[in-house]
Image (cartoon, rainbow, N blue to C red; front, top):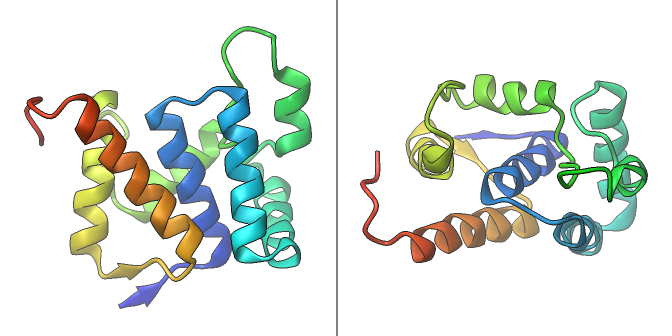
Length: 139
């Protein structure tokens, strides 16, 4: 199994949050949850790398954008495409099934999530969607 880098795992949590749909308060809560669970220094290092690469906007920028229309997700378009490429997901897949594709790919890809807060959040996001639409046709 191939372990994903910290920054890739953090980005994947924000990818899942994007498809789950999140308010700014939920984005902020995930930011705090990951910082606490991973360790502030390790999390900040991963976020700095992601920001430097243009894959996330960071909590400060999300806070600035709060109230300017739709909630600002942490992952940028480039960040979303990065996860699609990393997991070999179809970027044109139906959005309401994207978390199902994420779940299926994580199970079959051989990629390993080693950061427990990321792993548990992604599982919660996938489970939340399944609970909301239990009878939807799953891909």
